[in-house]
Structures are given as C-alpha cells and as structure tokens.
Length: 287
Image (cartoon, rainbow, N blue to C red; front, side):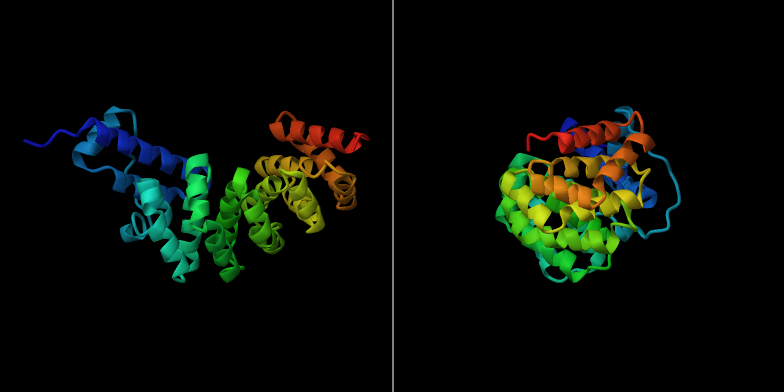
C-alpha cells in the first residue's frame, strides 16, 4: 500500500508552485525551466494530491538537462527553503560563481527582499555587497543586471535605502547604461531601483546628482510601448519631482516629452495615470 501524502506536504508543494508561477510571470524562468522546476516539485502521491488541489502538470519535452534545475539553481533553492538557504546562496555567490548562478542568486534574494522580515535579515548578511559584487563582475550579462537591479530595488525599501544608495546606486546606473536601451527588463528593474533609492529627500538629491533622471528617460524612450517599463519609469520620475533641481533634471533629460508619450501610447493603463501624476507634479510651482 502506498503512503498517503500529508496536508503539510500539499501546503508546501502549493507554496513552491506558487513561487515558481511568480518567477515565470516575472520572467526569471522561461517555459522550459518552469516545466522542469514543476516536475521536481511533484512526485507520485504528491503529484496526485496537488492535481486534486487544482494544479495542472503538462508533460512536455524541454531542452535543458534536468540537473540544471532544482537545488543547483540558487533561485529554486531559495524558493524551496527560504531563509534556510540564504547562507549557502550567499557563500556560493561570494565564491566566484558564474553569471548564471549570480543571476539566480540575485533573483532569489529579490524575492526574499519583498518582505520586511526577510529583507532586514538579508541586509544584515551584507546581501547588498554580494549583489553589487556580482553586477560588477559580470557587467555585460543582462540577466545579472536585471536580477541585480531587482534585488537592490527591493532592498532599498525602508531601512535599506541608505545602504543601497551608498553602494548600489552606481551599479544600477551602470547596468542601465549597458543594457537599459537593449533590454526592457533591465530598464524596468533599474527604474524601480532608482525610484526606491529616491524615496527620501536625501535619496532624491543623490539620484538626481548621479544622473538618474537621464537614465530613466533613456530607458523609457527605448521601449515606448512596454507598459511595465513605462509605469516604473513614471514612478521613478515622480520621486524626483520633490525639488526644483529634480524637476529641472527631468526637463533637461527630455522627461516631459517622454511622459506625454506615455499618456498617448498606453492610454487606459496605470502607467498613463502615473505619467499624468508626474506631469502635474512637474508643473506644480509649489516646489
């Protein structure tokens, strides 16, 4: 007689599958990687229980070898084990891992940095330094750039803002300079990181002085129909409108025209409203 799967197993499997679905939606996993990762989550009784809970497993050939996905994939290790995996992931990244694993590690850290509790814990483990080192070591790799910007952007929320500004602002701008006009994903993640770095008054001043407005507008102009990038870009520019210097930087970079284009190109999308809000803030003479 086969053993029955326990409810905790089903709940754990569901959590892992939900994380994988999020990674696929965010573009971290492609179709083949997603299929292989799902295959690893389920086996035998566990698959039957998960299918009964509504998950669909489609058999399909994939090009990647099975051993390339799973606990050798740092993103998947964090998805499966959360904070329990962080030390090994950080040690692997510090040990000179290749670009693929550095991108995976950054993507996993970005996931953990979405929540206040885990964000503070990985900040204490110098995640910022590890991510910056990965981006510096692999400046031509767009996956490292995108995942690194994503992780730094999430770590810049709240208590991590000053640390990310001090050590991560330049690497984010460098990533956008290298990839922002060729990769919409890098552009969007970079804009989001700059937005969070500029959340405070001090942060706004530093981002403006470092050329943040120019980087944001350049990325927006490169992909005028990418709604994710346009929304992140408009958000970031909004955070630079708290001072006359910020407004001047936006205008000098061509930001007004870029925001007006957003209103025309993506009418009905939240990005258009964000662009309208930003234009109103620019025109407000109270600052």
